[in-house]
Length: 250
Image (cartoon, rainbow, N blue to C red; front, top):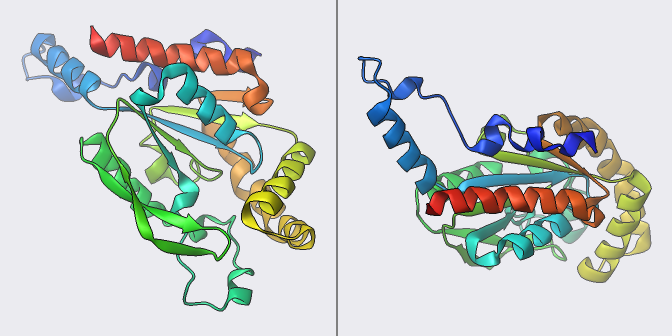
């Protein structure tokens, strides 16, 4: 449990603190600069990234945070809503796309949306149909909130997205557990066959996890073993977020 010690939770990113050097007025007086920074600090949202392998329990952790902190304080955005549209391809070709590679996601649109939300503006995020591998014509309105929670297997891979996170959580779960969870999910929720899930796991999911997802763990502020079942770790994270929200209201 050393990775979850409170000093890690109080790292620079989690304290939501930056350098005041840019705010110096040339006289060396930090008074007004500090006040201005504090006002900006508590106005803009806290952006949290939750990463981890497919089936690791990222969504469970995100939902636990929503429940413990209060959904009224949090805007939740799944990275997989930003899968690129493949409606121009025949269905059999769509099934062959590598959906575990960073290029399969329109991350640049997510980055744009996060910047808009940080500036206090609402955004319309895509709605993706996992059965047909296409974006629907509908979008989902996302309003700004004190906390923005972004979840996905690849959210730490690209530096332009990673640098927008004030807090980075990585959910770590054994590979066999992750595979079983993915198998059940894809069959029950996405209309997949056992054969197609197994083939995809061996051809793209596992190789992409080893190439992109697992190495991105080094960017995390906090590593949560056992996914959403690690109640101690989840409560520590939730308590820290509640504390940051209370600081904003003082």
